[in-house]
Figure: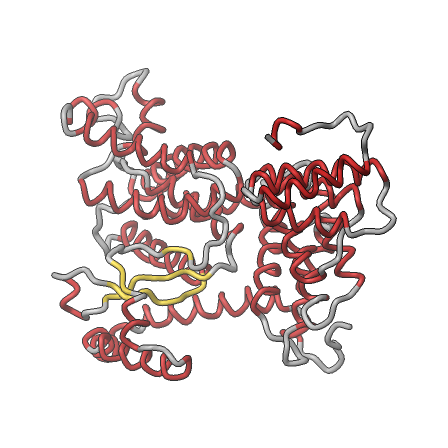
Length: 478
């Protein structure tokens, strides 16, 4: 049974909308602090000055509650990277080829091209080129996003591309990621050019990957809006200007991206009105962020994002009964309403139903997943079957049990293969053809485990029970 909705507030009945509303309010609060920075400057200055003390006190209190060392806990959050990264990123499978490829291209263009032939790149590939002609104007719209003004500009962009790109690419695929990156590179440059031309009547030049990376940030906002990010905060206060040591502070991704948007909007308006001077192309950032949001909507990334959010909630949330079962089940049911075939949600639901007592419903879920994945993802099927056996200690159907024994043998997990075959051969009503193959497989497994005596015993039993068998292993027994 799920938690009752009777008497619940709007926030409790609409948790996803409430979450987005809370993030928008937080972004508004940050913007208000920015507007009132003259009034709050003394407080902000003191916070920055004494940030090491605040950090040490905070981690010490948390460590006392969790029974850990405060110093060790604080050291685990220290970083030298000045970019926010995604916390608890569990999608590590696969390699983000496009992200690392783009980083390699950007670095190669800078060190092998710009530093060697600076005048040629500036005259032809800067957007707009210093010496425009029929071929370099259209080429520069894209190629300018692979140029950078210096090492700091280059590596700052590459750190952000690495931090955001690897997370997004693993979720949308390399092909779509590369296409979105190139579209954002072109449209952000054109948006910057149009805004500056309409506002000032002057041509503005542009270079750098930040517009394209802002497009990836827009995709991140749609696909990973629920993620928690570790944001670098100067650990040494004002001394961080000379010693770049940072403390990672947890913040929601939408809050980080919202602050990024408002900061660029504030500075971009200042550039147009003449109240701020900066070489940063803030309007390219805004254009890239906007096209990234539109691409995320066009690719329908919000639905898998909602599924992943509830899947993560089901793994850690505490519900109304004190054990989190009702709340976890509610989150999993939300995922399965959106995608009834979601493997992760079905596996988590099986775990929920078998957490405190073994239920037939959970057993059915486990075995259905194994049977479904054994052909398409055998490694995952083997992992789930191992978890099932550890909980239930009951064999599956004879054909599936024998097939899983073969999989474990194939993956080199001989103890699990032997365990599966032991359980299978202990069945009284096992069909003769499966018993024959299972005993033959058991001899192979035992010999592979270098257990010669048990292997010979099984071989003798096999000869007695199936004297006419076409299977043979006489060469193994010598």
